[in-house]
Image (cartoon, rainbow, N blue to C red; front, side):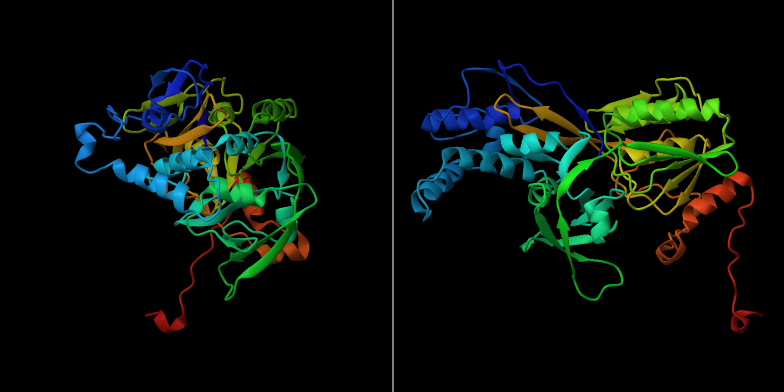
Length: 426
């Protein structure tokens, strides 16, 4: 996932969205989350006028009666069979429901504990199963398991639909809630039931959690003086590691580069721009377009790899930042794309830390390639479509997609010729 992280708000500031509910609660029941603070809007919500009866501005009064909110609040506290009911839990639950009303799987409110866990996602290490998940076709889907991770060793595959997590159905579950259920203590297990193309019944996969440490970039020079640069995710160490790979490519005068973005679920926008800049230079890499947003992000370094023949490997697990890079290189014809269509996660999230330790992540725009192609829900089509041959790889470690990439670089690639049956010949 690609998102731009906003600096933490000073303690004398509250986000307008939370101020809205804060005012309602404070006028009605004296429940405060902080001292009197100025409001800051992060999402346009209109002006709210609040009284002891919970009335709101005339713009909302036609459709919304906040008396219902307090009726439900009070009934929950009075009727629920487990007492006492926590005001804080109800409050955080109300905020979660508020953001879920956007009907966007990537717009989420995090309570303080969830916010802490979410911030670990882009770190170089965490305890989990080593797989990136997302929402596709309204289903909790495995975008990509990391190489040599517990998820990969247990048999989890890109494209798997996670139906249950330890017996809990995932229908309607957010990505963040699913992540919190999948992660746990080192050495403990989580059991997933998955549905997969070609399976008639659900497959149960038990995975032992462990500390996952990831070097996001790996590279090696192979036969023909061709360098393969594999990026597993775009995180805090990507730019520096990729720069090291570029230096070696230049010092060894490589004849071609295979940029392997298969199974790369994305990450930081800044890292994606840094990587693309090696070919694009200072030209536009990606643009974002939203209700009130229209920004273009240009490359930030000289095009050090310009002129070196390049092929980018992509698949259904290539998402977000991976699609930004592959889309830019394809638009400028700096590289051919080999593999299958990418995931299609091309939306932009702003992430905002809040004073009480909670946070909010809201989709503000969509990503577009330099030529204006919308990435979100569409994905990037490869120039050469090649489906990965899993059976061949299991038998003799033959990677047919990578071999095709080498053939494209060496000029020996020959597209398969469609055959016509004798019955259809005239």
